Image (cartoon, rainbow, N blue to C red; front, side, top):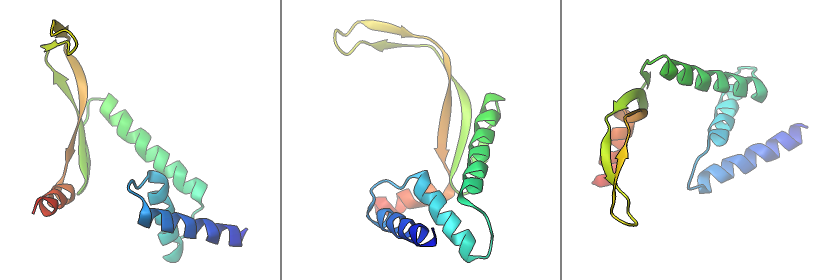
Length: 120
């Protein structure tokens, strides 16, 4: 079992290096590996459980009308979008788009710093 876990760790580490998209699976695997190295005894299923609780808490806060800020990364909040008139791209006819609530995602400091670095 230990040998299989080492092979999986190696495969995930290699896929993170070569991947264009880093998934939450990869990030949680890396977090689990770091926690083990730091001496914490947590299983991957337990880590997934806590991640799912974290994600559910974000969704529940948004449903309650609260904004959610994850330090250095992102802010989520509900906003009202007013009604507007759009155009059907196929025939150009106007279409009434009703008002609705949308989730706005705003990058915070570390992400905005990264954008400035990329633009230079």
